Length: 126
Image 1 (tube, rainbow, N blue to C red):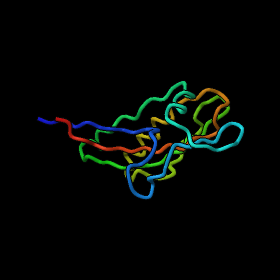
Image 2: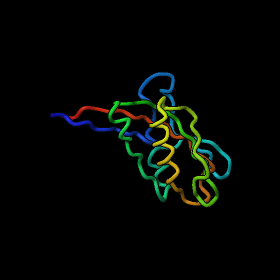
Image 3: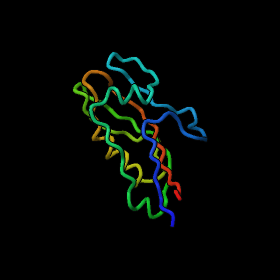
């Protein structure tokens, strides 16, 4: 009997294929400059970064997709808004990502915003 295993790639480098192959996590720093940010660097500046749960509805339909989400961050490091820059193609997956990102928190005064690519996929595990 096989089980389903979800691989959620949050804040992980780039998409596997297509027009978004060059998409990377990027940040607008507190001083206003922009740059790409490694996963380690991003997580190093967080105080909370809970992952997104794979929604039951998406599990049943084996829904997958890739999206890009922008986290707007206030001076205290709290998320003031999450904007869907590119939808995953599924409202259920977009909601799960935005709900999880709203719980993130960063060290104060580091970022104004970050854009994070997210890829949702389901793989069979034996």
